[in-house]
Length: 254
Image 1 (cartoon, rainbow, N blue to C red):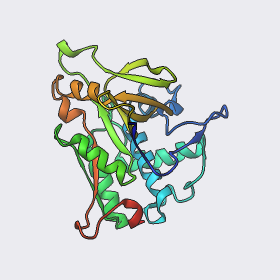
Image 2: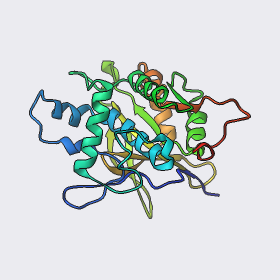
Image 3: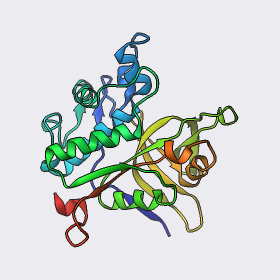
């Protein structure tokens, strides 16, 4: 029996300058920047801020109370690329930019979300996952509560792990076709699908403005075998601050 768990609302769409629609934000919007420039860092290392930007916009689409001054004019509609870049730049400045080397850490995403949640009075808090055992239960719980999940594919630090990554797939009629292999990259999980009992589970993701799929079992194997994989590869876990009697689906809160 097919088991499918997806977000309730439509995911973020942006109209590229060529007219094509995306599935989520794309750091490639900043392609062409000079080496060492802020724009170049956004292109090469901006995936974490893309993920946080999409998360905040999706929450705003689901409930007006989650709108901020940066996105209140962009809710529940297709954005033009220039509009999304203006919005992204606001989140970029709020987080303090991207380091010269490497991207934004999971802890920085956690701190940024919590700072904004306190300022806006949201009954939500986040923490960067430090457990491989709790990861999948937390991920499913967030999707059930209609919250997209920021997931990080870990970088490989040791020489023995160099060249390892996580396969990305496209879903086709005959199955899943591998299209690339990725490391040191944030994606947004928007769904989970197991087609038949006993077969592999696939996560539906947004990355570079496209819909891909990753295999849960392959991700699990990667984070448990590369150095610091569970710490570097995990999720931004978001939950309600309300007690168990009060809390429920995020839909009910908003």
